Image (cartoon, rainbow, N blue to C red):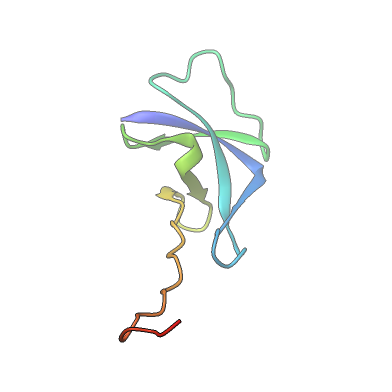
Length: 85
């Protein structure tokens, strides 16, 4: 288990909808040494060993680290036959 340093006043948005998902994960470390909680601004939370700061956010409602969703590209039209030029 690792530790994630979370900035509660910096928000992460859904790339597809723009909706706020949660707070930004600033850093992931093996230990909490050297950094302290700043109430209402920066906190430490437990996270999985494979947590990556730029790919994850902290869901303040569920109080857990989650992956930022990857937007699905729009479907391309399918060609149904030959076209004459």
